Length: 290
Image 1 (cartoon, rainbow, N blue to C red):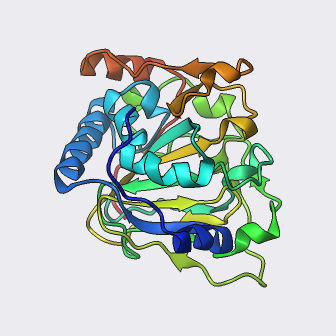
Image 2 (tube, rainbow, N blue to C red):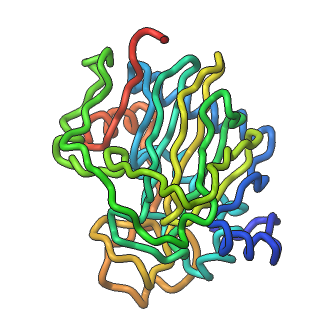
């Protein structure tokens, strides 16, 4: 994908990523793009069925998710951290409904791969505002300097009680029982106080794979919606899963992992059917608001 105009991270922002382990409030989407992509997320979640709170691997099935996770302005910023070659590893849609008790415990993304390199960050791109009230991302500044922490793992992850059973796919969480959302840790007392990543719709945050982060329940009446995506420089990628070569021309130099080079091209109905037939994780909210 061709490079777009701005934004570019300043030297101060790059220094802050090294020092604090995260950046936030980076403008990425125009107002028209916010409306378009939010509409696509809502349409997709409605088609999946139930009160969806999370969809994994959406870029592999939905053209809009591929486009959003490889947006030129997003990649412009990542290029300054990762270098000219950028791999897209994974994507997740988070849809935290208003008055929802759903939350994410403290964890580090790098725990699964034992990865501590800052060139494998995750990005959050908001399609709604992120506020303290609606359960925005929270990070512990400088916690990446303490290295990987011991995590506790749930044996199984199941869709939340009250989900629409007709929308459930075969047991992703039974196969991937140690998936990240089931692994949590505690915050060492000597670390900085948690920071609430409050942002406007269309803004992005970037966080280091070792930064401690999580989120609180949504106590507002409005939903919090966004796309989270994980990236890597190719020289430190060590997983078996296929990746998208999101930017750069170095793919010919790597033959030890599978590269997906074409976005989804099916109709929307075909995309939904393929996703529902896959083993990708789908989480649902409780039927009743708390």
